[in-house]
Length: 170
Image (tube, rainbow, N blue to C red; front, side):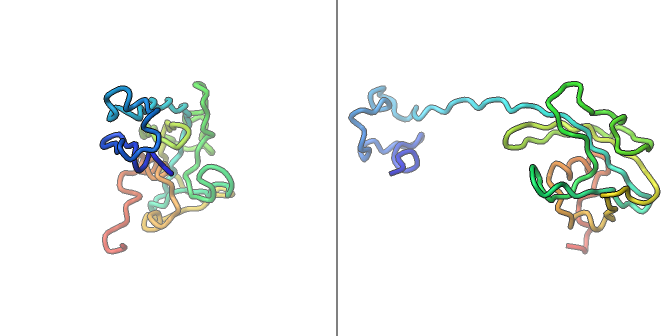
């Protein structure tokens, strides 16, 4: 029997139906609505990194597919550094995957189940072919990519409106 979901609820406890009411601390306290007491959540560890939004003249954005295993497995992302808890982690344009005129476009935050993430976002306009393991995604294709929310935030910080589906293409 699940007492916490059906009988011993915080707003309207049904103490008269409870099979353990004789030994219940909540009833003995005289204020059963104060129970159960929720413990404060631990702060999530903070990780940092950088994301690099490379944009071609036709508006295409450089993407790559994440490894199948692990966090966000198999999803699409813009190039990033590793996400580290170290304060001196790679979060500058010096950590970019290739040379370009990288300009800081802001910072985004995202919370995962077990950690919080801060990403410095860099944007550059580039020409040429996609590096090995990467591909170009045109603006009207981006909304169809398997982009996790954190990557949508990164792209939006660099190119506002880029992840929104154009009108008439819904």
